Image (cartoon, rainbow, N blue to C red):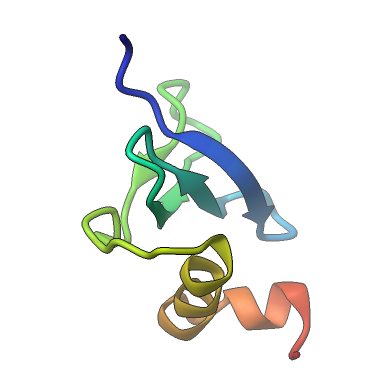
Length: 80
């Protein structure tokens, strides 16, 4: 069986240079990571947040922590 996280939500900056993915792991826990990509580099997205090791019981908890830990995210989605 493949070890793949299922992305539930992906939020991008308006310029498309960064994103945050909220995902469910195969063990039914949740997590998030911040990524960046450079338009001149065709290799794609690179994790930069070092949040992948955080484990949450719910998608909502992962999303709440993503908003707290990724400085630009609240501005992109709007303050709750």
